[in-house]
Length: 128
Image 1 (cartoon, rainbow, N blue to C red):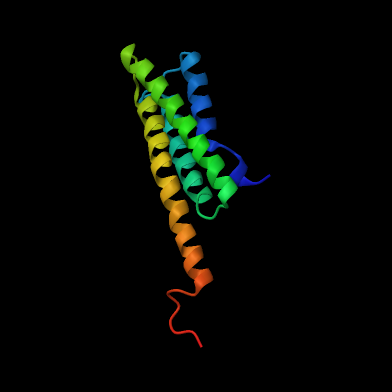
Image 2 (cartoon, one colour):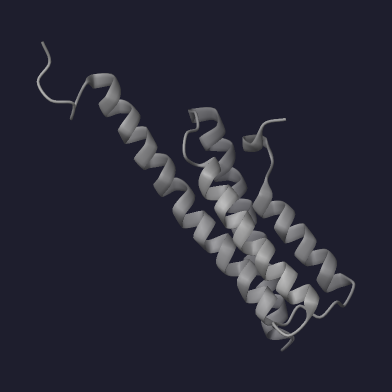
């Protein structure tokens, strides 16, 4: 199973929803909150790794997933803020979603530029 096919941020959001629906305390002082924050960092590292070298089709799927993740997480955080029930774990999940939405395309674009320059022979000194 390829790592690129797993939507880790969406899985993180689903885990977060499950924890919140089960009324588990996801604040920084609880075990569940600490585990959720560690999971956030792991997901962020995996997502950054995934965006390193992807094709056009995968990039389009990733962008659609990023939009879905951002909309879903924004809705949920807005709901918790309006209910005055926001915790540290909620903030960490939202930060991961926003950082993934910003860094994923940036890393993919940088890799695409590197691939294009390598294919054109740009930046490798004089060609004979």
